[in-house]
Image (tube, rainbow, N blue to C red):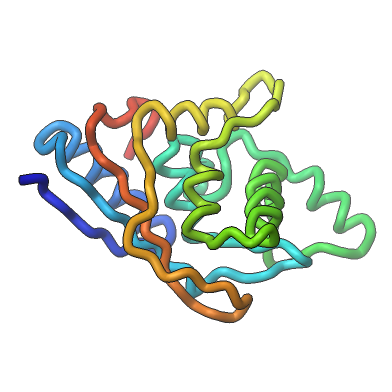
Length: 184
């Protein structure tokens, strides 16, 4: 019988715990299935973009591309945010990096096409990009997600309204060893 584990996660702490748990299970119980239920209560619409901070932190952490500060993407730049500030726009309390904005733009487009968040998230997590930057973290992210992990919808309740709270289930089957790109 396959061991099934459910983790409730929100933000940096939940992402790091899940990464450690998956690494441990990869060594001790490789057939275990882990469903990560990620907080979406902090999701928001920001200037027309759907931003899911906790979901992105878990996704980036498990994909091995989390920024040094514990959120956002590694190798991140903030040229778009700087340009918005030059126009007197943007968010004084919140800086989104350029790669992170790409995630939010893709998510928003897919949500507006009618897909639920539960379908959009695995699609984003397993997608590659055509970025040609020297430290192509987009490709590294996609490779880490697709080669080391299998994501599929888990127990979920989508929240279509901008102010609704919900959960997204992300199931990871630990069939392959956890990526060495991730560190605790």
